[in-house]
Image 1 (cartoon, helix red, strand yellow):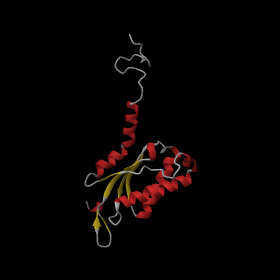
Image 2 (spheres, rainbow, N blue to C red):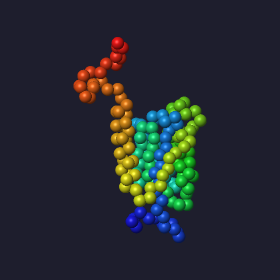
Image 3 (tube, rainbow, N blue to C red):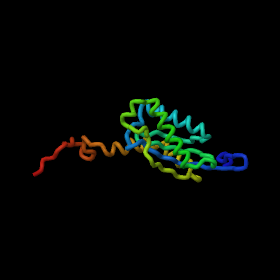
Image 4 (cartoon, rainbow, N blue to C red):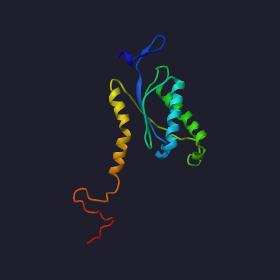
Length: 161
């Protein structure tokens, strides 16, 4: 338990947050080279503020982060800093995105945040498995070409009688 606590000059703290935010219009822009660059950019910005990334995953259309934020920084100011600066850095590295996002705002205005408390391991597992859960959800929405129960081929259009 003492490993989870950090300290400043006269303060001992344990502030961990689960943060989720998405690109504007939930565009599926986080993939390939952009995904790696976004990871590097977010790590740099967290290091500058003294925020520790415990676990993070860049899904196709959103980011999950489990972070430890010092109490001298409010969560809203940190997320604003993270999204604002990363947006500018992403547009500097990938200038072709400025045609899709005309006003140089890469992220949606809102975000989700939750305090972790004593559930750190559960949330770490959730973030680790998030990509796999997204893949399963995508597969459930795909059109089936074979009926899983009968094994017969499914026709695209059925004739009405």
